[in-house]
Picture: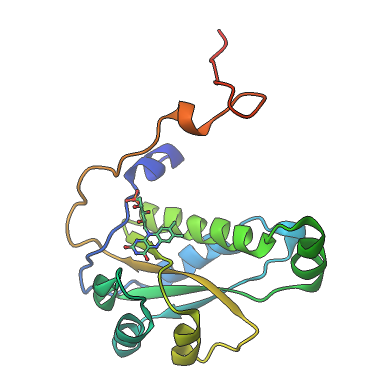
Length: 187
Ligand SMILES: Cc1cc2nc3c(=O)[nH]c(=O)nc-3n(C[C@H](O)[C@H](O)[C@H](O)COP(=O)(O)O)c2cc1C
């Protein structure tokens, strides 16, 4: 598959077959994250790969927030917890000066590398951001100083996902040279 095909194929998948994800696939997915760029090459991302179904059920039952309880999570064969171990230079001094939380950008890039690699391997994924960080830390024994910002469910899709969720047109998200100025293709 080309990168373009992978990007177009990817959808958020919220129902999975019970088939486990092979260890070599999990490693290939994590290798894709390992090669991601990061501010000052700080590589602050850390991942916890959870495959134990009781632990996944606990995450689902005890760590999701109300209104969007993400019930489907309980059936996922693999959940990757996206964590950050903040470093002194980029993430404490640098972030204080610039006001930019580099570790969040770094983790997002690394985890989207995971998503794209998983898609290439025929696996489905869905990001989860609606959870209680404290509850996740308690369940998985993650130290207080570690930041948990995202989860990713991974597994073989149960059904072919429906059509793509709508997207804004390019004119709404891309400006040219200055804010608000329409991008025009030059010929
Ligand atoms: C940071 C982030 C957090 C998300 N959190 C959730 C979530 O808690 N539950 C959920 O069902 N989907 C979640 N999603 C998936 C989005 O709803 C989904 O990407 C969006 O609707 C576009 O659909 P698509 O991924 O199929 O293109 C999240 C996505 C991102 C990037």
